[in-house]
Length: 255
Image (cartoon, rainbow, N blue to C red; front, side):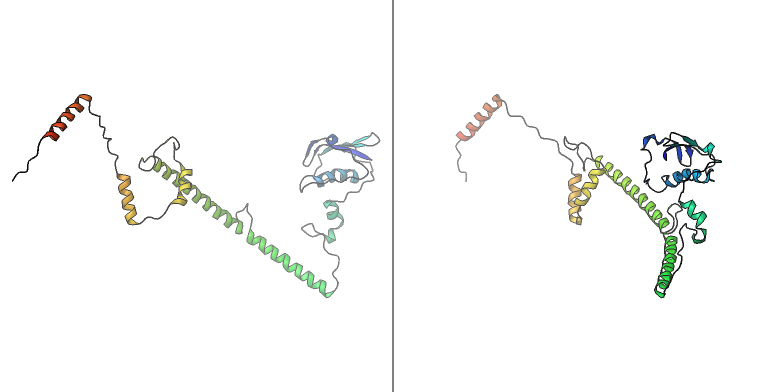
C-alpha cells in the first residue's frame, strides 16, 4: 500500500513533501478548493496506472513510498504494473467521449416520455437564455456588456468624488484663512474638510434681509478698547472742593 508521495515538480507542485501530512490509510479523503491541485495530484497516481508520464507533465519528478519500505520514482515507470485505477476528468474524456460534451459534462443517455421531452425542451431554452444573459452581462475584465457599463459609471462616480473632495478641501482652507469665519481658540486650533462636512447638514437657506444683516456683522471691524484710569487722590480732593463750593452757592430766581 502507498504510504506517501513526495513531488519535486509536477504541474502546480514544487518541492512538496508528504511529511507535513498524515500517511495514507486504508481509505483517504482529499478535498480542497477548485484549482487547488486535486486533479494534478490524481494525475501523479495516474502515471503509475499507465506506466508512463502524463502528456501534460512529461518532465515531472515524484517519489512514491510504500508500506513495505520500497520507493518508486518516475524513472522506474516503464515496465512496471500497479493495481491502481484513477477516475478523473482525463478518464471521462478518454472513456466517455461519446457521452462527453464540449463543456466537460456527460450527456444524458436517453429521454423517455412526453413530460421528459418537455423538460428537455425547457432545459434547452433555459441554457440558451443563460448564454444570452452572459452576453448581456459581459466580461468585467474586457469591459463589455453590463460590466463595462458598471465600470464606466463607477469611474465617473470616482472622478466626481475626487472633485468634490478637492472642492471641500479648498473651501475649508478659505474658511480657515478668513478671520471673519474662523478664529483659532484653545479648543479649535484648525479647520479642515472634516469640520466643513460636519457643518453642511446644519446649513439653512437665508432670506435677503438675513444675508444683508449677517454681511454687515461679518464686515464690522472691532473697535479699539477705551481705557480709562481712575483719578488720583489729589484730583479727587480738588473735585470734592469744587463740588462743595457749587453746592454752597445760593441760587436766586431772576426775572
